[in-house]
Image 1: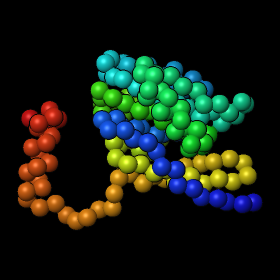
Image 2 (image 1 turned 135 degrees about the vertical axis):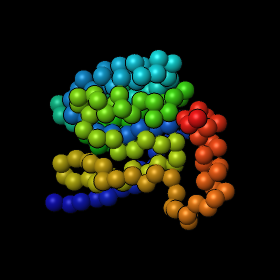
Image 3 (image 1 turned 180 degrees about the vertical axis):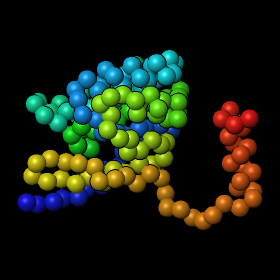
Image 4 (image 1 turned 90 degrees about the vertical axis):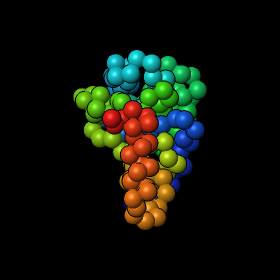
Length: 162
């Protein structure tokens, strides 16, 4: 048996967030769609789910054609069974993650970010699976007082803290 490891660079456009997870059933697409619009009715999104049995198709949905195409293209690049990918605009992952986690088919969330994102994929004779992700860049140090003030100011500016 042979094992091959690949790094898949995902496209993450400016002002767009991406969520990657794993689920286990074909109805995941419809349930994730409902979870997103029920959480943030104005969200713009595209989602794709890689089926891992039968015809092994990419199943997709969304309300933004550009984001839906992006999700499909990147789901194909990842090529791992039972993986879903969601691209969001006009909402943040924090607005939808709990709803996604409560979808009965969802097994885990692997990443939720607007950073550059790499997916580390293993391939065997049977198929492909995600080993992990590289989310953003290497840590450069520890925050100082000015950094704490900037962080707190930013959270208040965008309305997440009072």
